Length: 88
Image (cartoon, rainbow, N blue to C red):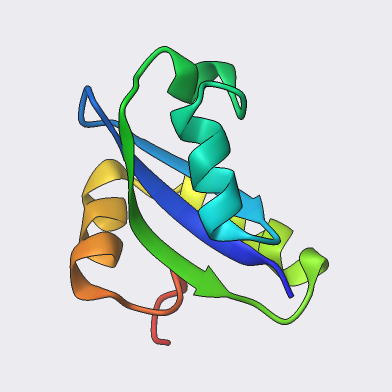
């Protein structure tokens, strides 16, 4: 089952992604091998993650989180809410 995760970058920005193994993916980001975005903003730290039932659901949730305003993303990270959907 995949995970959705949010990273906090050095510049304070938030990066959202999907991975089968969050710990492994975090190491890849930290080594500069995962994405151009995070490579330019190292170091990164894991701010939030959640396991989902399928890759399809992970893609939907990733899309939803990526389109949230920054304040909503920060609220998601701070509250530990399990879903980015309203009312859940």
